[in-house]
Image (cartoon, rainbow, N blue to C red; front, side, top):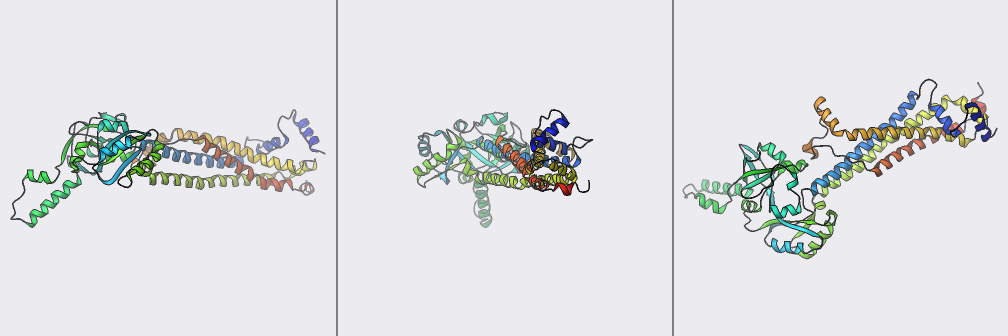
Length: 446
C-alpha cells in the first residue's frame, strides 16, 4: 500500500481529513483517550514553559537595568567632562574652546568632592557638587527631578537627594552644616601646633579664618529624586561660589561639564577636545566614567543568557524522554502503519511533529508567563517583601527603587526560536529509531 493509499484509508476512517497525515497522527499520540494531554506531555510542556519564561524574565530585567541605568546617568551627568585632576585656573578659556565645537550644545563649570554634612548630630559624608544653576540647567534638566521645594541655589542654599535627606532627617527649610576636608585638616593641624607649643599665643578666629575655610551653614531649598540610589543618597548641590570657598579654590574649578547634540556623539567631541588640549587637560565621556558598571552589566547579561539556556536544553531532554516513551508504548501502532505502507520519512515526521507541537505550546505558555511576571514584577517584589520578608531587589545595592525591565522583540524571537529548535531536534533520535522499527517484529506477538 502506498503513502497516498494510506492517506485515503485515514480519510475514509476519520471523515474529511483536513490535517496532514503526520500532524494528525502526532496529535492523536499526544492526546490520550480520556484526557486532553497526558501527564508526561504536560511535564514536557511545563519544562519548555519554565525554560522560556525564566530566560525571558532574566534577560528582560538585565536589558531594562542597562537601559534604565543609561537613562539615569544621562539624566544627572553631563555627556563629556573636562578636567586635569587638579584645579582648572583657565576654565573660562577651556569653556570657549569647547563651546566652539559644532557638536557642543552647552558648557558649565563645576566643583565636586567629598564633604562632611551634619544636621542635629547626624553626620554623613556625601559628594558635594558646586554648580552655576543657570549654566548647569542647560547641561542637565535638574528642575525636573526636584520633588520637594524648588531648584533654588541663590545665596547660602543647598539642594540634596531624597535618600540623603531621609538619612540626615532634614526637610525643605532646614539648615545643614557642611565641612570640607580642607577644614578638618587645617583645624587638626592648628590643634596639634597648639599642643606642641602651649606657651605660644593662640590664633584668633579671624586669623584661623584666613588660613582655613570655616564650615558653611546652608538652607535646604529643594530635594531631588533622580531614581538612582547612588545619586539620591550621596549627592548634594551647592552654588559654585560656596564650593569654591569650601575647597579654597579662589576662582578655580575642578572641571567643565559639556552637553553634546546627541549622547553618543560624546566620543567624537572627547577626541577633538583631547587633541586641542594636548595633555594640559583631558576629556572623558559619560560612558568612560561609568565603563566598569556598563561592562559588568553586559558581561552578566551574556553569562545569564548562556547559563539559563541550559534550562531549555534540559527541557529538550524532557521532550526526548516523552517521545521515547511514546515510541515504546506505540510499538504495535507503528508496526501496523509501516505494514500498511508508511514510509520512513512519514514515521520520522510524526515524531518530529510531536516535538514541534510541544515546542509551540511551550513557547506560547512560556511567553505568556514571562509577560505576566514582567508586567507585575514590582507588585511581586512588594508582596515577597511584605509577606515572606524576602528582599529580591534592595535599592541600596542595585541603585533603583523599582525593578527595571524591557522586553526586546529580537531577544524574544531568539529565545523562542532556540527553544523551538531544541524541541524539534530532540525529537529526531526517537523518530529515527521508530522509523527503523521492523513491522514484523512489532506485530509478532500481536
